[in-house]
Length: 457
Image (cartoon, rainbow, N blue to C red; front, side):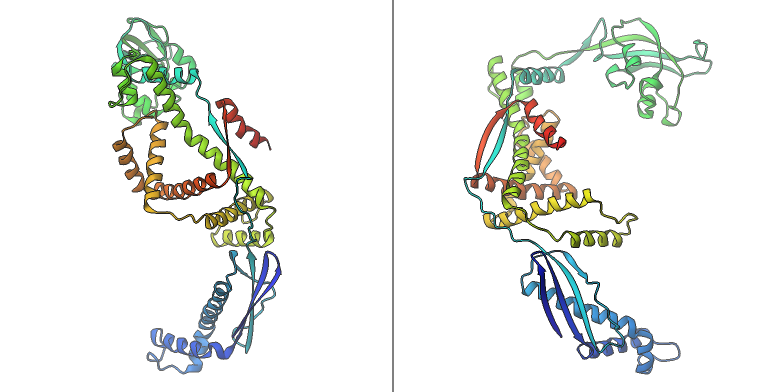
């Protein structure tokens, strides 16, 4: 058996495997005999059928299996031993035409897509921007207002607003607007206009007083949401698809009284360990909290800019484009997908991502990036912290964050995402050390425009 490699161009090559029948004859004979034992032919005891008859029945499939294994092993051994950096998987060359049962000498050719060499070296002459989002007084005001509502209390109110919680009794009406005989009646149901989908119906609950009676349509108000209707009308979900108008009488109004700006409120927002005593110090603490919450956004933007700049610095990086299209099309066929064609848009997206992956892998090796358990634990902690901040919990106790991190690590999808974050965190941290980082403070509006500008390109 002989294996050789021919380089067609910088990113395409062909591996040729030349096989003689004598290279596989003994293996074929042995496996055909074993088939005669495991699957005896009708009329013969196990292992007693003539070799010629066994070869007639089992020879083609066994020969295909033996040759496939032999050629495949030789192909991948050659790739590994010669350190060929291939993309995708080898594909059969169109010129390969072999009669497995009759050819004494068989030649198999495989097309290879080769990864281009990446020569990029990181240095301080490479400039990457790092955007720090400016925390304005308005952002601090909005955060405090949100927390004052969140930590506020419900008290009796004289007039409702769109945030109020109302209690009242309801009766179903017929088409003439009269109380429907045998219709639904509800005592002391709870309603809040803020959760209604229909603005016109929601507006009926704004500015009402205790004792007011008026007509509204629950089905329209909640856009037919069965769960909401079932809870409001106190009926089973199967009976909640009611489209009638109802008359409601308001019996109680609860409005939200914002939390007072005092030490109890400061602890509710900043944590019980805080030593903040006055409003000025509290505002400073909130500003710092918002700044910390914005760090993941700034870090992510750095990765976007670094990817673009480093890919440009690496140069054109030619790819075996036609080979990659064939490879992806074959994968889709193997997966049984109906549409296996590759559009130009899909191809260009794939090529762009692949070029960056090649650059990233090259730089990770140059930087000596290795992921330890400590890196994954840190990534899980930061991921949990980020998730909690999205729910308005900006200063969660460390124990709570660690408990949340442990829960995420028990979920397969979350754990995989966290491991990817760990790799990225360490990689981009090393990149920041190796290049020149230009810090720029910009408004949140200008920060968003960075993405808007890219979408227009």
